Length: 318
Image (cartoon, rainbow, N blue to C red; front, side, top):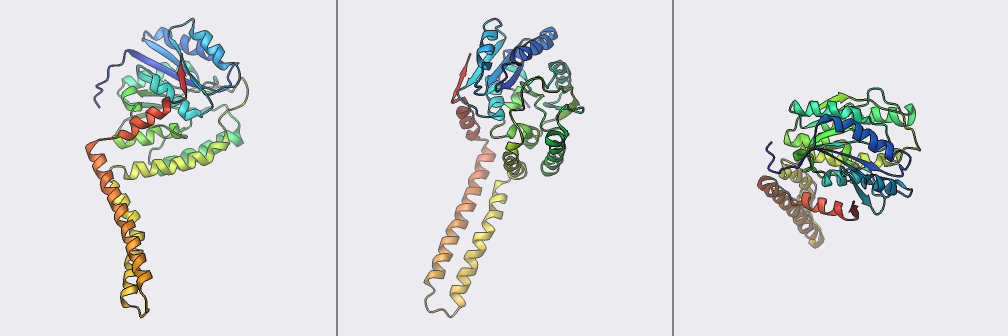
């Protein structure tokens, strides 16, 4: 993969924050102390996901003292994935590291991620092999979800939910992120043949407050999983996918036509009307597939640019 974009920095580390006033300063210090000795040009990007406490004020005061620290503020709470996407969008480093803002990820592991990236991998995923979370509400659902995700996507990652990941900027900046899609990045990038490595990372128990992103988002993850499966399976052959979709209305059109033609009904107008209706629907679906083929093979992915533009709405950078 060739990167035509020049990135002014070696490393960007970004983390979302939501009501983390007790931990934001400790997080910043931990990241700074972990990456400053590495000899890399770097930046730290903290994204305030519409916090209602003093998270933004504390982060802003820290940024006033350190030019390496940048703050992005959402005007309201959008969620973890949009916050991560905003950090990635603002990042200027050749390598981008994402992590949680609750001190459960250890910034000291960043050095190991960079070493793995230097071996030639495009993405390095963290595996919380000694996860310090509640067994029933966090660890068991995560284990089940990881197995399901691996089976459906064909990308066997042990810990899709670990936010501590490292990416080459040329890879991650071309991946659209929305809803809860951050956990499916390895599966989505598999479409383009990226190389993925997984390493063990440390995981600490939460020191302050409660988890801000809990079980309530499970239904979103399930819908996103269906979306990712569709993308991974059919993105390179959209006409085939839309052909399968057209079989149902096409079959109905054929049945109604034959029934109207060979039955003894006195007025076949209604059946012929249904034939025309479902024939038009079949044609429309196939035409959509043809357009999908043209878009894929010409490489004109305008959707990604539109998505990035919408991600910027409602954010302020400091």
